[in-house]
Length: 198
Image (cartoon, rainbow, N blue to C red; front, side, top):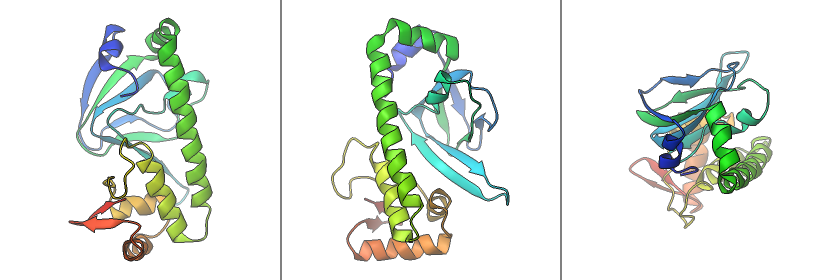
């Protein structure tokens, strides 16, 4: 949990339950609140000129949603959509800034979290420019595993379908299926009941 729920509630945060496909914000909206996931998953996506979806991230319990945009005067460059029943804690931008001013230790934690997220985002972007599909897929899997407390081999259950992995890496679904099988043969990952573990 990035910020303890009790602290957020003490500053006036509200808890909101979302259904699958509910939109938290749209690309082009002005950031007005801090969002933290209590349970469920949220995808950050964008549609290119041809209407093809590109998934830029999938966030899960304990993570915040595009909080970095609360510190700059820019509009959201992505959509945020619940991909399963999800509960979020929402705190207005003004109250969030007050919380940070009055709790410098939380502010430091957020700086550290943002720095780490940005670091892994750079690594993922480097991998996504590769012409080799296996490099792209490994990069995406390692990026998402980086948020897990358990880094042991095969400890992380990948929360994506093959189709979602294709949208994350910009590859075709058929290519992802083929590469996943190859990576399993190389003992990089395991498949148990159609779920991928790295």
